[in-house]
Length: 85
Length: 165
Image 1: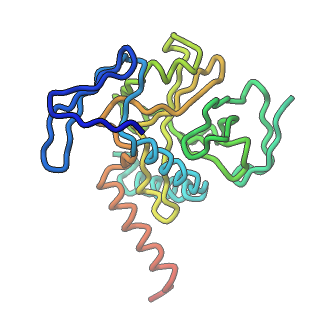
Image 2: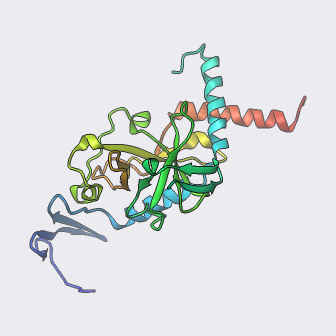
Image 3: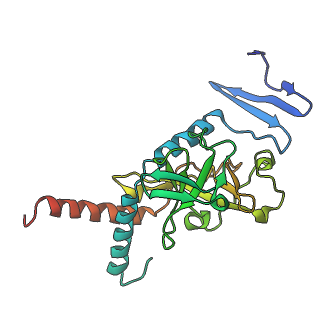
């Protein structure tokens, strides 16, 4: 991995059209500005892992859970005189 | 040639070519699963995205408007390029739900990463939208609704466990 030291206000250029600048350093937080073409996806690294994690949780859902929901929702309607709100 | 697979939720499952949805990059967490199909009852708003690589793997999904009426995901062009269309009317969006088995009322929807499907060519991918305000775990039901259902389910469990007590 290439490691560079930068100060606030300084920047790094990647390829022809991506620019990353250090905006501010405060305590253990670094604020970073990114200039990239619209077709380049930029997101926090942990986000992709989080999406994968929620997908892995999602497959644990059982159709039975859906039946429980439906039943409880129906009774909810009944107890409110048929008004779903 | 229709694909056949034994599934946990739908038994023996047959998918015709025209119902097959290709995910060239898989789905995060299931990167090697390239072929999926939609399944589920017509009268239920919740459908299932069934993997054809593994019969145990199916993700509950809903159309975004079920969860958020003014849902408006900003999708990066680079991610959409894979779907081989520039026409947004070719695209359909679905949100993946997480439904805790013991507390289904606490289900959440992943607003941040919708599944985007080119329904004409049947190619899809899960895309991380640029909307910082959208959470990967957004509660689907209101706090009041969840609380009511939680209480109701708890009282039913108690009644079942101790009849006549």
